[in-house]
Image 1 (cartoon, rainbow, N blue to C red):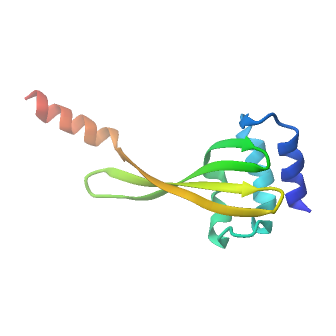
Image 2: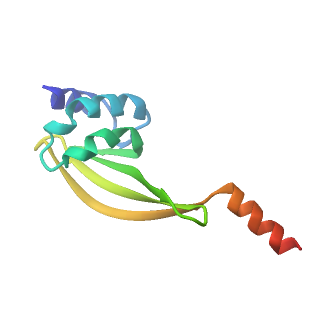
Length: 116
């Protein structure tokens, strides 16, 4: 069972930040759909995990989802916080935040107008 692989990986770790995100992503890809509460479309985003913290039996992860770039060159990213309970094999969305970034070309063009 793929969720058992996730459980085995995590129980071998000390509580705290998960350092090997590549291995975690691979195991999550295999068991994502076995977790109750995970929307089907989200399985393909485990590659976007930014942070993971193990607090037995809960794995807290943050996944970034980019939104389209808007005309002024900025892009918005939705960051979802999820709690994966390996004992109950469930996933809960615990929070959403937004991040806006401005492209370097927009920053540079804005700087030039400020200097003139």
